[in-house]
Amino acid sequence: MTAVRVLTGITTSGTPHLGNYVGAIRPAVAASRQPGVESFYFLADYHALIKVGEPARVQRSTLEIAAAWLACGLDPDAVWFYRQSDIPEIPELTWLLTCVASKGLLNRAHAYKAAVDRNVEQGEDADAGITAGLFMYPVLMAADILLFNAHKVPVGRDQIQHIEMARDIGARFNHLYGEHFVLPVAAIEAHVATLPGTDGRKMSKSYDNTIAMFGSAASLRKAVLGIVTDSRLPGEAKDADTSNVFQLYRAFASAEETEAMRESFAAGIAWGEAKQRLCERLDAELAPMRDRYQTLIDDPAGIEAILLRGAEKARALAQPLLANLRHAVGLRPLLPTPASANGGDSGTATSNNTKPPSFKQYRDGDGLFYFKLMAADGRLLLQSLSHASPKDAGVLIATLKRNGSAVLAHAAGEGVRLAETVIGHLPEDVAFDELAGAITLLLAAE
Ligand code: TRP
Image 1 (tube, helix red, strand yellow):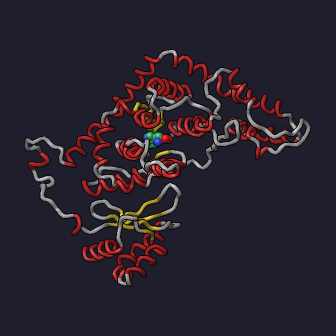
Image 2 (cartoon, rainbow, N blue to C red):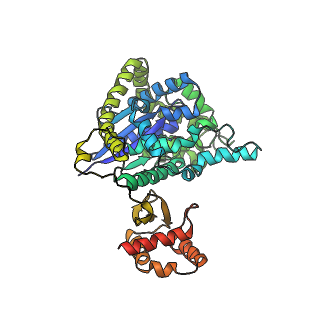
Image 3 (cartoon, rainbow, N blue to C red):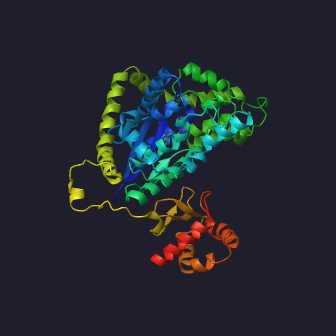
């Protein structure tokens, strides 16, 4: 059985809070213990530079996040646990990918678009204050993922687009230079709750409503007492499902404890009492980890050594892959090498626009089935609608191949309408004629 590679990065821009624990650390540590899984967890400190301009904070956050993961039981010998900036192959791959990534794709990234929209709204220049780092964020992230040929990338919903971009960029590279990369999918854990913060919105640093994972027992208590509740009095029945106190309790309690709490809510438990019980439950889970965390934090050299060992282990995989990629793109020594001496690719330039396109079928993070038509140079020509089964998608591909010319013989306008409603959509930069031409080429080649 080949192992499934699971990889995710944690941006080192803050102090770990309970939302990080419930949403990322706890499920990741549990997943890393499953047989047949190879886990790659890394501290995304290059990504942190895009958002944080305070060097001391980047360093401190790296220490705290590394200590948090280790305190929560991550075994660095059983996984790949490293710091992004210790792997020079990542920025090197970022450049190779930059050279194939389409700028139009990056223009459509949510984070960049949101920044542009804000500028336009405020009457500023569209790109005012936007760094090239923010613009290139998805390419760096694609390099993180593709370098280790990860199959699954557990991320929050806000990151799904980045995984799709990694796949697009990887596919384009594969088409141009050969099959080097596994194309990753986003893994969204449906049963992992988003934790409410103290004000009831999603717990997030940007809302300033977080509860630190490893504050003192006293500061934990203070944060819990500050959780917003309604004004029901002791003795009045309370609705568990709309209560932040209950949601937080549930994320840490067993099924039986949760049921008992639900009954107490119906029986009119006082808010003070409910918060007291939440405090006790949190403390029971966090106290042992808090002690380990403190020991780790007090020994930064120990953590540094763990990260450097992790980097060595990661580079053992990254270096050979990158050597292949360098060769593939033509960054080669000038002496005859075995690969070029016996032919390899002979270096004759082949024209892309006479090579037929190909269909790619895949299953997406939403569990549905899709296909794409990719030009020989990796450009996306057609993106399908979703299908319930691979067979449904396959039937449509077969129809397109069989009747493609008939379907597309309609007037261009009609053909576009048909493509969009039945088959899928054309990317903004693909003209209908180009799609028709590609399908004709495909038919001719088969
Ligand atoms: N962008 C991710 C976030 O903000 C962090 C990240 C960086 C990442 N590189 C990654 C996540 C690679 C998954 C895979 O959450």
